Structure formats: structure tokens, C-alpha cells
Image 1 (cartoon, rainbow, N blue to C red):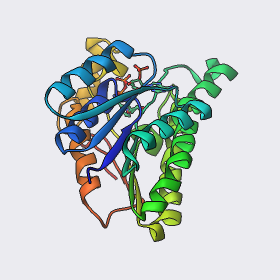
Image 2: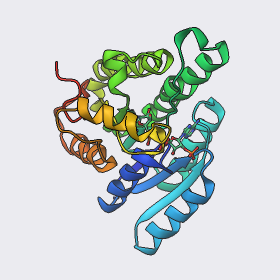
Image 3: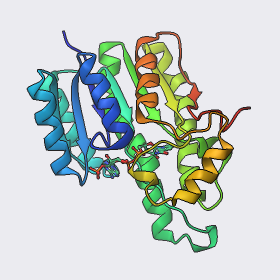
Length: 243
Ligand code: NAP
């Protein structure tokens, strides 16, 4: 029986690269998107024309009701969920003193509470199957903190804490939970940075380059295949942060 995966925020960037990897690996893939309907539909057409099993589902994963619908759709369509990729996220750069109550809540709702909602709705199906793999896309900033991104860093640190705690709780049910904490990856999320800013960042990275989304997808593939890694935060960052 084919395995099934959900990728939240699968319409663009890192999520889209993971969708491609999963489709090529022979998974049924649900591409969750929020606003990028056109892109998601095009992805579905492209993958389906190649013979891959891909569906799309619109849901704002910060909202519990929409998450429930996404999970119900997946179960109705494919009967089980083997892999959950909690990838959807936003970033925002602001001085701490300028962060409003609304900014703070919006960040925690989208980048942290979404992972709570998704994981809580999916885990019962994984427990039923006595197996599962959950991969949370956190960030280097959750590990080391980022100036002018306090709310983002807090949300991502929360995701990493969820990864570790859940790995302990769900290990006996044969469900593995890991985080991939990227450094800087070439996606729309970083389009706001100027050429000078990007050059400055690149100089700080030992491997001397911005990462590609495929590096994150390769790590996700390895985490899906390996059966003895759980509760780990794996930072793919070109050496930007070496402890
Ligand atoms: P991106 O190119 O901006 O894509 C973000 C994706 O998240 C889009 O597919 C978007 O969907 C989706 N999304 C946003 N809010 C959503 C919501 N409420 N419900 C459902 N989907 C939602 O960003 P990216 O760089 O690929 O980032 C992916 C993940 O990696 C994020 O969690 C980010 O924090 C993390 N990360 C990225 C970097 C980096 O340098 N790029 C570094 C560290 C960590 P729609 O377009 O359909 O709305």
C-alpha cells in the first residue's frame, strides 16, 4: 500500500521542494496551501501528468477547524497518514519594542499553534497504525535567537521543544518526531533582503553560500528512511551555527 504524507505550506519554497521529493519517492502527497491557490493547482497538474499521486487542500493551519478538515480529507482520500511535514510558516523582522500584540499572536498562531493543531489531529491515526514520522521545520533562530525576530525565534524554539517532548511521548508508539532547523534558504521568505544584506550574511557562512530548498528536502528524506533518529534538531545551515 502506498504511503501518504501531508506537507503544510506545500505550495512554495521549502514545502514545495519536500512535496517534489515525496511525490518522486512514490507517496500520496497532500499539498496544503493557504493563499497560493493558482500555484498549488499548477503543481497538482504537473505532478499528476507525470503519474504522481498528489492532491491539494486549502487550509489556514493556524485554525483548528480548517486543520480538522484537512486531516479528514486526507483520511477519506488515502485512509492513513504516514508522514507529517509541519512546514507552513511566516517570518517578520521588527524591533522588539515595535512588536504589537497582534504581531505576536499572529506569529505564534501560524508558526507554533499550527504545529500543535496539525500534530494533535494527525497523531491518533499514526498511533492506530503503530508508526509515523513527523518532521517540523523550525529555524536556526529558535536555537540561537535572532535580533529583531524575537517572536519568530520564540515560536521556533517552541516547535523544537514540542519535537523533543513529543519524541519522548510518542517513541513507544513507534512515531518519530524531529526538527529540521534551516539557516538561510533561497525562498520568497528572504526576498526582502537587499543584495548587500545577502552578501553580508553569506560572508558569515563557512560554506560561503545561501542554501537551496533541495538540501532541506534531502534531510527530510533521510529522516523518513532512518528508523533510529528521534527528538533531534538538525540544523542545515552551511556551518552558520556550529556548537
Ligand atoms: P515561503 O517561501 O514564504 O513559503 C511559506 C509557505 O507557508 C507557503 O507555502 C505558504 O502558503 C505557507 N503558509 C504560510 N502561512 C500559512 C498558513 N496560515 N496556513 C497554511 N500555509 C501557510 O517560506 P519558506 O522559506 O519555504 O519557509 C518554510 C518554512 O521554513 C517556514 O516554517 C520557515 O519559518 C522555515 N524556515 C525558512 C528559512 C529560510 O531561510 N527560507 C529559514 C529557516 C526556517 P501560501 O503561499 O499558500 O499562503
